[in-house]
Structure formats: structure tokens, C-alpha cells
Length: 389
Ligand code: NDP
Image (cartoon, rainbow, N blue to C red):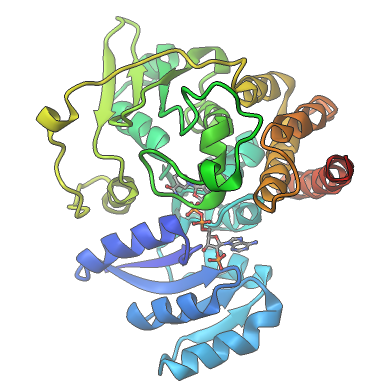
């Protein structure tokens, strides 16, 4: 029986994980679950999965969580605060940690799980974007097993299985992108939060859905791929594939391409990571190729989606640029969703924030956290200028 701690259990990836876990009660049990503020849902999950610990990030909600657990007759221990989430990530009672917190708030717990040598199912892409080489070195040195949950990286991971180091060294990564809801829309000036939070193929949390529409998500994935697979950015290509059936590809030296295909359902990638190196049923219907009919491809339009180009530039510039870009984007998306800035302001905020980043690379977690906090202060000031306009 593998014991899991699910960080971000109340979110979209958390829900997919719990769905797969519920289909395999003989293989997996849930030790701890965490959320930010949604205590009712968290308590319900703790109860349904018989978790031993439930943690809410917001300390003010400790009492509410305790009450919600008690009301449901659940005897899970209530804890509150970001430090308690880090504690859960390194807790020896769990073998596997699912990192499904959204945003830079997930960085510290990913590092803690890696340091503790866990099997880490990492969805929180911000950990890799900001942690980069520092995180990957930590994973290696502590014998942790990092399995990428993001469907593109999971696909690449699968395509690279069995490849020799030499094959990997010469491989080219081809990340597929759906193109999001605005692929063929002429002007993006008047996009509303309602429009940007509806993805044509994937059902995901709000932040990543907006990122997907601006193609910042693909930019973050380029940065992620660079570190996860130790491939320089000039060997990472993005191609638009609106059907989201091919989740990504690897081209080898002989120009043969390996692709991983499946329905766009995150339960597939979560199940792959959970069972690795085996495979288990994720409860996802098989692909019906006659219904899919065609797989199409087109080049991304970098003029229309400049955030993708900005991510490549951030990689060229170095570590702090990626941290700045990530923080600026997170706060800009938040402001856009709150109706405070325009959709097209997201890029206008991210570009100068990224370009003004110090060029050297961070060397340890504390420097990463400090740089993220500093970037948030700068971005908040910068965004307030836009709100005033
Ligand atoms: P959601 O917004 O659906 O869920 C986020 C989870 O994180 C919730 O449990 C939320 O708790 C918790 N959370 C939010 N803020 C904090 C905080 N400050 N401290 C602690 N916990 C917090 O996000 P997704 O599931 O969509 O995404 C999670 C991660 O996975 C992201 O990094 C995303 O980029 C990545 N990812 C997601 C994919 C998807 O299909 N959804 C695909 C690939 C990657 P609460 O409910 O209380 O707010």
C-alpha cells in the first residue's frame, strides 16, 4: 500500500488524483491532504479518504477546519499554515507526495519533498520554472524520484523511456499546444475573464486556463522542459495542435519521432505517475480514432502570443528572469481575473519585469524564495500603475 500526501487536494489536479486513487483502494491510501482556504471541501476529502492529517494554508482558518472535520465525524488531525504544508511534504508517514498547489506557493513544499527523497508527482510547474537547476540537483542528490504530471512533460518522459544518454543528448523536444480559446480570434484587446477561463479541450484551474489562453502556459512549459530533461532551449520547439491528442513528442537523431497520444484528461498522467513503472487504468475512455478523424498542426503566432517568446528570452537571460516572469504573470493574471487590468496588459506587465531581472542564477532555495517575494513587491507596484490608468 503506497501512502500519499496530496498538496492542493481541493484543486483540479487534486481532484483527478483522488479520482484515480478511489479506483485503486488496494494500491493507494491517503495520509495527508492540503488546501489554501477551502476548508469544507478539504474536510470532505479527508473524511472520504480517511486521511490522517488535513492542512489549510491560511492560519486564520484553523478553527473552521477543526469544526468542519468534527462536523463530518472525521478524526483527521487539523493543521494550519504554510509551514505545516512543508511539514507534510517531508513527513515520513507518506511515501509519495503529489505537488498540486497552484503558483509559487508550491515551491517550498516541492523542495521539501525532494529533499526528503520522496517519490514526487509534480504538477506545480512553478517549482521547476523558478527552482530550475537548483531543484533538479536536489532531486538527484537526495535520490528523490520526480515524475512530471504536466501532460506534455509526462508525454516526453514516456517517449524518452528506454533512450540511452547519447540518444537523449541529441534529442529534440516538440511540445504540443492546443492554442487555447483565442487561436483564431483577431483581436485580444477586449478578452474578458469569463472568455479566458474556458478552455476548448482541458478542464483545469482558473490560473492555468488563463495562462493557456495567453500561451504563457506553453512558455512556462518550455522552461520546465529545459530543466526536467536537461535540454537547451534551442532544442525545444512548440507546435500548435488544436485537438490536444498528441501530448508532446521527441525527435531523435535519425529524425524518427516518438509521440504520446491519449484523451485530454489529467487522470491519465496522474495514473501513469502513480503506478510508474507499471501502468494502471485511470478510468479514462479509450481514444476513438475514427471520431478524432484528424490531427492538425500549425506554427505558433509569436506576435499574437508574445508571452511565449518572452519565456524563451527569460531562459536565455538566466534564473532570476524566469522567477520574475513567473511572479509578474501570476499577479497580472490575478489582477485580470479581478477585472482590474486588461487582458493585453498581462504581457505589458511581464515584459519589463522580466527584462529588469538580475542576470545571475540563484544557488539555493532561500535565494529563489527571496527573489520571488521581491518580484511580487515590484509587480504589485507596477500593476497598481496600470489599475490607475
Ligand atoms: P487549482 O486552482 O484547481 O487548485 C489549486 C490548489 O492549490 C487548490 O487545492 C488550492 O486550495 C491550493 N492552493 C492555492 N493557493 C495556495 C496557497 N497559497 N497555499 C497552499 N495551497 C494553495 O489548480 P490546478 O489543479 O489547475 O493546478 C495546480 C498546479 O498544477 C498548477 O501549478 C498548474 O500549473 C499545474 N497543472 C495543472 C494542470 C491541470 O490540468 N489543472 C495541468 C498541468 C499542470 P483552495 O482550493 O483552498 O484554493
